[in-house]
Amino acid sequence: MKRIGLIGGTTWHSTADYYRLINLMVNERLGGMEYPELSLDSINFGDLVRNNNANNQSANEPIIVGAAKRLAASGAQGIAICANTPHIFAGAIEQETGLPVVHIAAATSQAVGASGTHRVGLLGTKVLLASGIYDAYLSKAGIECLKPTEDEKDFVHGTIFNELSRGEFTDALRKRYITIINNLRAAGAEGVILGCTEIPILFANHEIPIPSFDTTKLHVGSIVEFMVAN
Image 1 (cartoon, rainbow, N blue to C red):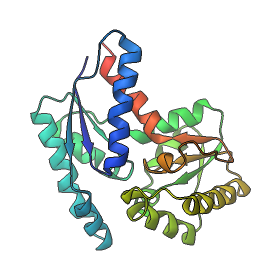
Image 2: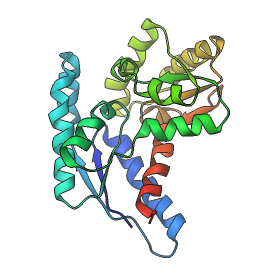
Image 3: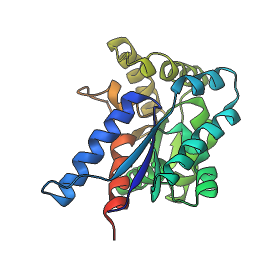
C-alpha cells in the first residue's frame, strides 16, 4: 500500500470526513484489520481566509506547497489536498515535491462523464470557478460546465468562507443553495458538482433536486485507488 500525504485544515470539517472515508474505503477493499498508511499536515485555515480577504491568492501558494513538502519529507508517495480550491496549486506541488497529486477535478470529471451527463453545474468558491480547473477536465470529456450568476457566486463564496467553514450548516443556507441549483437546472444543467468539500456536509441527509456529484467521496475513491494499486 502506498503512503498518502493529506493536506488538511481547509476546513477541518471536511478533513475529518476525508480521514474517516479513506479508512472505511481502504478497509472495504483490503478487509481484515487493514487500514491506510497516511500523514496529515493540517494548516491554519485563518491564514487562507486572510489572504482571500486581501485578494491575495498567491500568498496561499507557499502555505499549501510548504505543507506538501513536509508530507514528502515524512515519506508520502503521493499528495491529496482535502479541499477543492487549493488544487489551483497542484502543479506547483508536483514541481516542488516530485510527487503526484491525486486531483479532485480529475476524479469528479470522470464520474460526471461516466454518468452520461453532458451539461453540469458547478458550485464552489469564486477562485475555483475563475481558475478553470474543472472546465479543463470537463471539456476533455465533452461536458459543458455551467456556473451560477455573479450574485450567486458571491453568495456561495461568502458562505464557504463564513458559515460553512465554521460548521454552520443551516436550513436557511440549504434553501438558498437549492434555489441556485434549480437556477442551474433551468439553464440546462443535468447535474451539479458540489465543488467545495463543505457543501456535501451541508446536504448530508437532505435531498438535492438534480443528480449531484460529491467531490469529497469521489476524490477519496481516487485516493484509495492510488494507495492500493500495485
